[in-house]
Image (cartoon, rainbow, N blue to C red; front, side, top):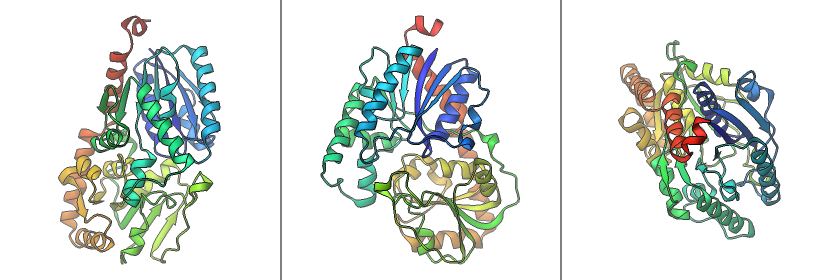
Length: 367
């Protein structure tokens, strides 16, 4: 089987693509990977080197959620059509909505990683302001979803947002994201430190809640300060001396940070899935999570929750776990076992492969 998969290089979708692509290749699937958003850095491309069956096409075309993206979407759609004619894939798997409307006689699948309307509701509690761009965005997403043979979401909550804001797709499925457990170290000695990973420019990640909560313990926040879209750049924050800010960490540096940290604070107010908390759980960090539907769905009773978006509640939860090492280890073990049981990369890849096979004619699979 040959598939064409699209991804972007400016967020967690790139990590998702890495796990999915490498798993598919091990199972004998040939993959053409096309990336958008920005040209990948050398560190981002290392995993693609020497992989048999992978054909990588990086591009700098803008993503549909970026302002002034319409021209790039039109050009990148033509670019994709040329690649499709060249490679003749059996199935198209898009990480963007816009390409679902491509006029091709090939099964099309969209993974709904996030979207602007549900993001805006979570952050602002209302619809995005009416504008030429917001109308274009809604029309583009709706057309893509309507053209897709199947729409996948990484959580039941995210799927509910798609149906609420855009209508019911013709076929839907929830496939949880996954990570490879042995990429992470759950056996390192833990330091008395709270860590959180999230883009500072993204209000939905709300990592500044750690600064506003008045924590009196070492805190490390890892994430980019500047947005890849100049129209959506958030304002930089000045943090107290007790908070360490680390930008542009490599994958190995993130793994090391999580391995050494005892507590992970999942502060997001909008989270379709959340790869960083999963990586923290696989590193045996105890999870403290904002009480939002996604985290409840994914982590159940294996995380300690604080009242939604409440800095005082976050401080109290951190204090509780820091003052009780046995309770902290209990939560870290609960999250670790749940992560291994429910959110492995192998489980994710197997579910996608089963879906691919249901959409692709048997003669194509055999070929």
